[in-house]
Image (tube, rainbow, N blue to C red; front, side):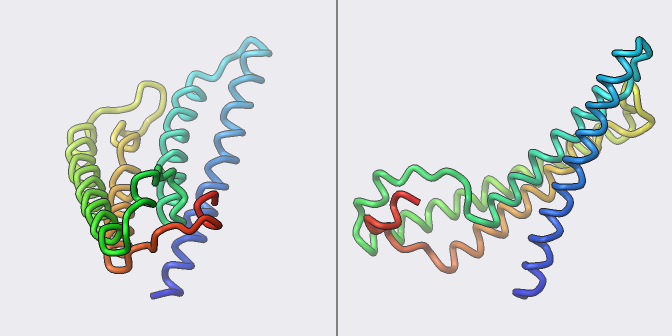
Length: 160
């Protein structure tokens, strides 16, 4: 399982890097085409789609790394058992949040599947498609974290 997760994390990072490069090319293409007074009609729309995908990839990467901001002022004041209980409640809520995002994304994908983008020959469902894996990753990571709750922060680790 560890090899799979390592490969998954690397795949997310590579995908994010590739999409960032494509976004850069798209934006630069739009800038150059406007500068020569022959603007491409599709660069703005493509850039919007790519930014949504990059935001969701960043969300998944941060979720996997435990990199989302956590305000632990109250949690750090709890004892071991109370901290573990609060942490479990937080992880249950994160599982619910990820599940709701994944479930609702299916509806968004389905209802937009037959609507074509304005300037590109693709479905607008692609705008909502990255919400499904982002919700699933959030839900599964919360399940993993639920099984092994974090320890209360020590003075040395509370600043990291």
